[in-house]
Length: 443
Ligand code: UGA
Image (tube, rainbow, N blue to C red; front, side, top):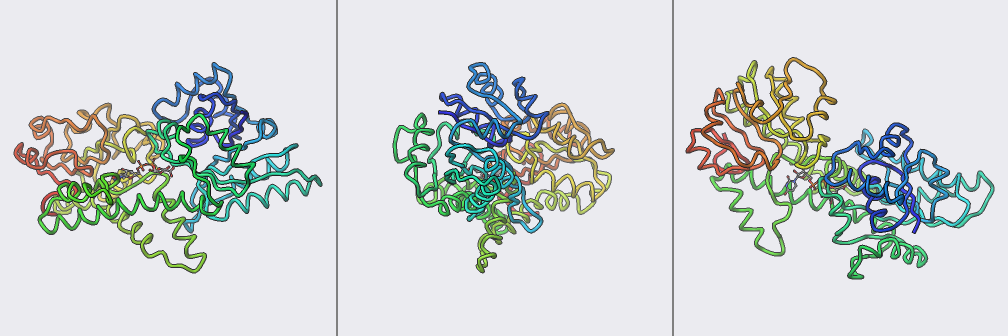
């Protein structure tokens, strides 16, 4: 099958490579010349495990091509995936300008039947806007060419996107058209052993399913974080509570790990976009607003705990930070709890020494050279001479630590752990003042 993918960002690139890898012929289009030039050489601009290898392998088989020419991509096959960004507008709604620009260019260049597949995370009703945009472009050309628009949201997690694409729990396709159903079945046939994996529904339901899934997961996280804050005040341990509730299959263990708040490009953006959509139809989504508010507060807890440990005297202190990315296995720092912490520390007059296994370049790009920021080559260098340590991301290499060594290198033995990596009693026995999330009394 021939497939075009618009957008060579995280979702577009993973979609293009995975579809090529199972035998489809794929052209991936982006307006960014430099990015496309790099991709043609097999250089992947983002960090995602296995992605570089997948790009190179499929460039070599000749099944994957990159282009900056919209006309070339539009001419290539019937399925036209839109996988461009939908950054949040100032009011929290999703900005559709890139999605609609692709729709316009498909309408401008198409010569035969096309199925336009919305893969970008877009609000309910976007497929209709895409349809109007394409129709308008066709009308300007004064031609009538049939086309369909369907919704096929992605559920990829950064850090395991290829695995998630290849072993999706479900593939959602929103369409009313039998012709589209049959083309999408053909496209995803290599992934489907059980037919029920492919779930067909109305376009609007498919669009909402994407937001509902992310909002549900964000709700679980904010819920457990709320419990963590309560356990700190009630003398209970949230890790015990987590195990206690997770064992109930109706609740489950997934996505109830307490921490310093969710980040990334999806949950914060999607929860507020859904709340915005709700308000546009006259509905106050109180739960969604609460989920977002709890998360904003949770991100501040790292700084608050540290500040309390030092009686509010953080000026001129040097704080080591392990982990900058919003989660392990990515270099992505969008909405990461580490950013809230760094910015609050600088405001309080502290200096920071940071280490992250993958996000150092991203940190440099975001914050540049500054006197109060030291990018360290490893976790040991970060804590060397620091007054205290804060852990923001649960990278594997932070999980095993010699507490006696840590106690020795830190000027004050304060460790604020935003990811509950260690056994509090062992840390305390080693002489550390260890503050985790929801484990033991709050400061
Ligand atoms: C999320 C969803 O999990 C994907 O299904 C979805 O496709 C994607 O958004 C998207 O819309 O594109 P992602 O943002 O990559 O994926 O990351 P997650 O693994 O879901 O983690 C999000 C945040 O929640 C991280 O900051 C993580 O630390 C936090 N988290 C996750 C917790 O604090 N506790 C948990 O139990 C799980």
